[in-house]
Image (tube, rainbow, N blue to C red; front, side):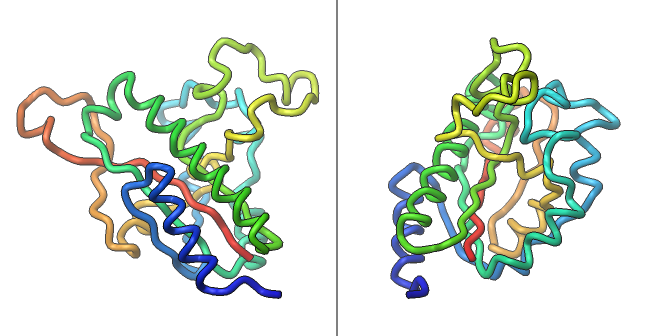
Length: 201
């Protein structure tokens, strides 16, 4: 039997229970994927996690391939965690991003168990930095072993080319680009967000 709207409502409520500030659903076709966002991982300012994880470029699924696979999905559930901009410029960022991965992974698992035959979680940030910072190199890439954090780690939104600013605008979430560290009282009051999503077929 195909999933019904109460299942979606349950997933939205579950996102909140897991710590999301807000969650919403959209048609999967609303997700815009562009090559340029994945390219930013390498240039002009190379990401420290570039090449170090299976969920990051150049090992991650290419945006062109992701666009092809995206047509197999009907809906997406997107969620966010609101936080001060300054939190994302300091050590708190890692804990917030780990929570994003955990929410995405949990919703994916529960969606599959609830009858969605296909569910795929995506999250902000590199799994290498978040879960294996002391493990060099990645055992998945280096030895072909199973990921020791497969219950939490999910592919990077940026690596797949997701246009998140546009997605946030579509949902109606104010979106502030993460800039350089701030110092003024006004800047410290600026709110930002981290996000993830789950694709549903």
